[in-house]
Amino acid sequence: MNSLVYLRRMIINQKPARVDYTVGSETNSIYYERAGFEGSYDEVTTQLRDIFESDNVNVITTSDFNPLSSKRIFAPQAISAALAGYTFNAETRASLLSFVMRLPPLVVRLYPMQRYAFQDNSAYMKMHMMYQQNGVLRMQNYISQSENSRDEMIRLRVMMATYILGLIAPLNSSAQQKSIRTQQINTQRDEKKKSGKVSILTRLINRIRGL
Amino acid sequence: MVGEEKQIVKLVITGPVNAGKTTMVQNLSDSQIAATDVAATDSVSQLKAMTTVGLDFGILKIDEHLELHLFGTPGQSRFNFMWNILSKGAIGAIFLVDSTSDDSMAEMKKMFAYYAEHVDLPVIVGATKQDLPGARSVDEIAALLDLGDVMVIPVDAREKEGSKMLALTLLGNALVEAGAEDEYDDEMEYDDLF
Image (tube, each protein chain N blue to C red):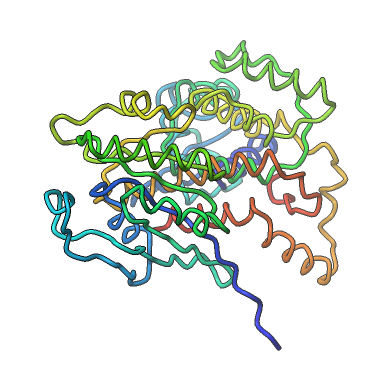
């Protein structure tokens, strides 16, 4: 689910950019400028759904942006529209769950998503309540507490929306500064990762997706 | 220097006779599988010419350090005792059931009852032959077999894609359980996500 990472970074950066993505053998682009995606409501919705499921996404930050159209869909509205009724197959579900397992303890920001017709707003509110009660949100718990497969799908959509729009962030922001590590620590960590059940399942999923 | 030990995990594919277990093992393996098919002699011979008497076995290499070993069990409940061995080191089980056959349902019920009582692994049920006349719906199968929360998914065991989707659904479920059980690993790398 690298596409989620790219979309999040682009939206948080707030700079004009072009997203190139490949679906099947076809490569397409969508422009992002002034906090919105260029295109009509339907065009942006379709393109964002394609981006979610694309394995090949690239964001190019561009200063010489030449808009083809004056239509812009504000990012929260565009993401809400793309996720409205969005369903996914077992392969995408497995990718999303693998992604969820990598998320650290989180803080959740409250944002008026209902203004942008976010269909899963009540689930988002519950997620925020869970965060407030515990002082931290473990997305793994939030997803595993799903009552059924439909509920799990809703919660995964909430994860996608809040992640892409920057409404969730690591609780321990200092952890982001851990980029300088010794080779020894990295090696120990790799060993630890390899042995964990989550790591094993994630590797199995990635391999079977590629069959 | 001694090489790093290879980790092996098992996936068990089980269910009544003629549901597509051998084919699914083949679909998910990247090595030549060991099949133990012999000519069927009893009532099974009315269903198909050959049947599995031992275990179907296949290997899917995941990476340099990990292999998935796939085991397809014989399709009769009298082999239930094999679970004691098969469940050790297994990450889950896929049951396949022939949606068109009452005999398959009855055998499946016995097999699943044993499994529910003796084995604690993530499980999923694939309902095969859904394209044939007389096939029961997945909801009917779930009710008939008294499967509770266990998911039943229609699958064409002959198609690789169907086998993939069933395995991915099971692994997704197992991942959710594992994620909820495990404490968050503070050393885990997530800098690239934020």
